[in-house]
Length: 112
Length: 100
Length: 145
Image (cartoon, rainbow over all chains, first blue to last red; front, side):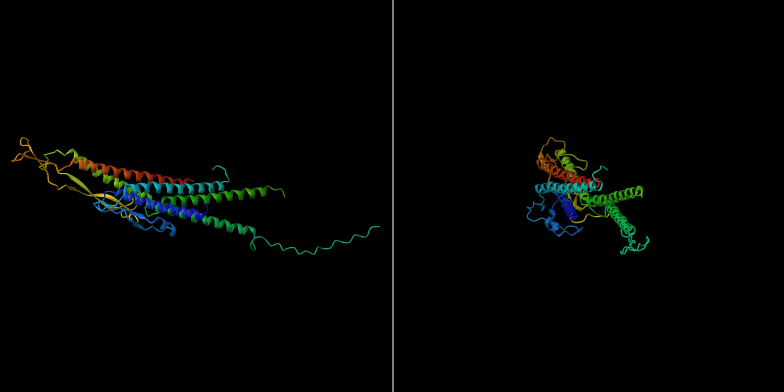
């Protein structure tokens, strides 16, 4: 895994963490009158690779609203919760195995 | 009867002048600067890691995975340095043991 | 700090839903209470949720979360203004001059449905905490690689 790929993996994890925070926010506000579902434009933020910059929070379009104006969908948020976790943990695992390999190389295969 | 042996003639090869140690770029000086660079790099990484941890703990910001990676990187560089140092020392000792 | 902020956001959600559930249970328990210390029958109460900019538990008092992430809180407890239910029971100790007793304006079916909704909301927050904990765990592993 090159340094460039690891840097991308780190950015990927940054964005997923932020996305998950918004999912938590949506779930906490599932019964708040007038609350609109929040997210980030993941693809766009990942492609733009702005190092360390905070991604932009956007409002999600095309979600049906209830009488009080709240448009949070339990199904959508639950699905995203699982998806974000799996992706994040996968990226972390890849980086972890890369780090372990490097450690091994430094110690020439001997246990530390 | 054998012919008389001609006297040994000087070999017309120009040998490089041997400069005393400390003048110009000898092997020792190059190694010293490499060592200095390595130490200053480790210092930088260590500082980055510490800043990262402090920012995280004080709530200023920074993601947990980035903190973990910064700390890991600084530890890793230090370990690498130790390994190299150990190798250099054992190579030196081996040289010193040689019968000349 | 996103992941840790998420934890405190979910915690605020759990807290709000719990308060809502407690009030609903109180309504249900008092659905037939005709006499209260303030006089008259029990009056139904409800919570009002509003979103809050969430402060991080690690941060300074005025540290706010970046971006649009928000927690939730119970901003008020309001009394249900729908009229009380009057039943004709002339022999009842709390009957008025015309023989009517005022009963609470609690509709048990409605509050049971609300309670179900509060439970689902609470469970959503619990699931979020569990997921985020798993992510934080994975990230911490990178330290000891």
